[in-house]
Image (tube, rainbow, N blue to C red; front, side):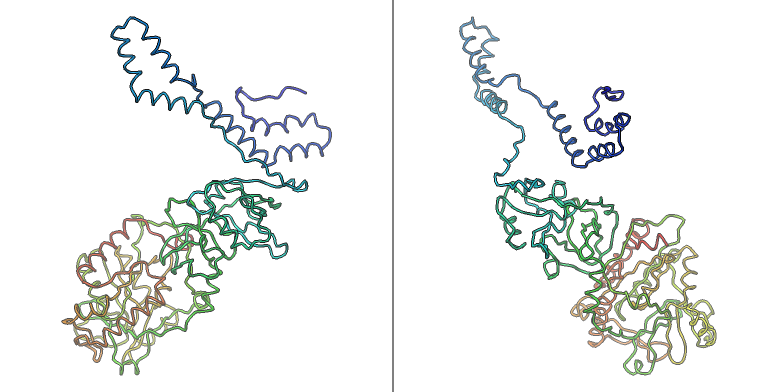
Length: 576
């Protein structure tokens, strides 16, 4: 056999040598069958792993420092005894004094202890009771610290065997690379598990400390390498695994809150995904319900849709939009504002679970993101918007609504309103040109899509307040809306802070102000609760308007961050 070429370097590793062996032997192999055998044998994953382990051990063996001697303390005693018989000069006196010091003696003693100790790894002895037929059995020892093992088990319904159901990404089992999905578990610390329930085995593992020894029959199927881990989702609901009766293992669950960003580590299981909190330094993943599973069970227990209190829009001569709270009489005689767009997709799949997201930061040449303000009547939303506009009229802008009512003498077309005919308004409704619209005293009022585009085209931040059910139709690549929910404080704080304030009534065209009543406070709280429960998954930020000055400061800070920092947005906005 010819000598094998090891390349230009003389220190080629065994792994590289084995990988090159089939190609170098090819001219000397007679049959294709033998060649195939060679390729299969030297391409075996387990062989590659063993060779890599060997090379690592060999490397550390070469690097291992060897002590010069194992009995430094005895040598020091011999030296001191010999020096005593010599003529004492200053150097000998100093050396004897050093060697007699307790700390030097302790140091030499520690040196001897370390030098005489064996640090080679000690493998556990092979069990004596392995059957001859069990030639594929694996004995695995893992050192357990405070973290969970990172694997779940189940009983195979057909064979009754205890098998590994899943390996949690980043967990101890995953990092070891020794346990795989489908492996059959035979023993844990010498205790047979064939007749035990998964819960009993989990209890054994929980009580075990230090090293845990597993006897495993490896799975036959080959695991495909996972390409996942790059997907990020925004949670649209709160989740606590301890309250989930369906989760396979509560200890392996990952809790999260609405709005949290999660990194998906595995979607191998159609029912249970593996995820971790974005930015979490802990590599271990946890179980969360999959999107499909969560949508299915939420849809089964979904409550009836609650109709929101009516809100009709009007505009004062100053150019600021205001929202009218209709009296009971008004509510009976006027139509509700409703969505002009209909979407079967939203009607059938609008169950809040997860939304795939990606980091986004506005570039200098891009239009500003649309800012949508949502809140119940009387919460102070319009006052906050007015303060924003006044703070920088060149930076912020509002839409000009359309109406079919007659223009008054002090009004200018395109300033207070865009005045159009009823026929043209209805034509625009049919052509889906309005985000939302309504009828009030036989006149139409509405906010058009073009009015938003007009503000954004002036390189301004468009401030828009709409009914919450309209928000989902604005969530497009064009507008990239950032939705802020203005929430009222507790009813006690409302009584305290709004006792001298007034609310706009809509009993006449001019709109008159009247003091808040207890009924107004109760309706504001109720309306806010309905908005949050039904549409909270669409809100990017919630600001409690307890104190107007503080709420405005928080709102302004939010706007500054929105324009300068990176935010998570739906993937569809950047990849449409």
